Image (cartoon, rainbow, N blue to C red; front, side, top):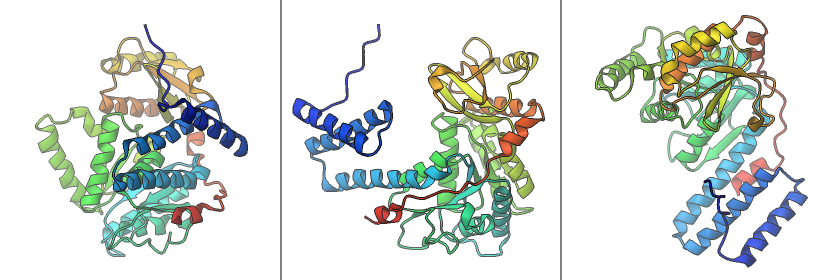
Length: 379
């Protein structure tokens, strides 16, 4: 028997009533939001007040306070472009202008921008500046980290409303992952490897939605090729990852192949979410009945009973992506490499018609930034 979840609140009726009244007043003044949003806001206020009860060190208070402010500001900056697909580009800040890796990043970003994508970088120099120069200011986001060296915002994105400055790496990483539909990595140092391995870890463990990850060398280069060999020999060779985990990324020295890896992933596939114990894949067009039966047989190893079934939007999904078809399956939640291969198959067998055109129609839309966004960030 499932017991009702206990309400998250303070140990004071008077304070709980005051919090409820405050949230109700805020909803009325700010135009109101749905009940779920108001409940989350109430719980955030309760958490802040519980901190007073816990009496943590001032530094801990400062960390949590600053993190919440940074995340809120970043969400506001990205919100007007929510419907536009974005690729995060990582690479060394020390790469010199005109170097082969620089040219690759510039060409990649330019090609993605032509296809209606936006580019997110760490806003620094080197590979980051190359990518933002290729995409152009209008198609660029910068998520800068405040460092005592080598990380002033580059001239392409400096002063733009789409530049967000972070104090903490962890809040910056949340923004990268939260808003990315693909990740492209060019040669870089510790930070680049950290971002690459973290992205793969989040995908592998199901903590991030599936998305394409591509490692791009200079033409004829061996930086990522040697890295992939290390992964194959030392991670896969020692059975520290599964054979299908290598499907979670691609290594190439071709910009055209890197672009194709990203765009092909969204040829039919759109997004996914869980509804109870079912994984729901949103797609532009569902495969035929015979094709679905074949997929169920081919990928039976990742199903926890049943088959892959076509469906319309489920009631639990609300109004999210209502115009798309669904593929519903009971996924074992651990075979993420196999899940990636399933998505690839769904893209391969999709009818070549309106689906591809709809999937490509992610154009940059005019956005109006909150007038006080820059002022709030500085506070």
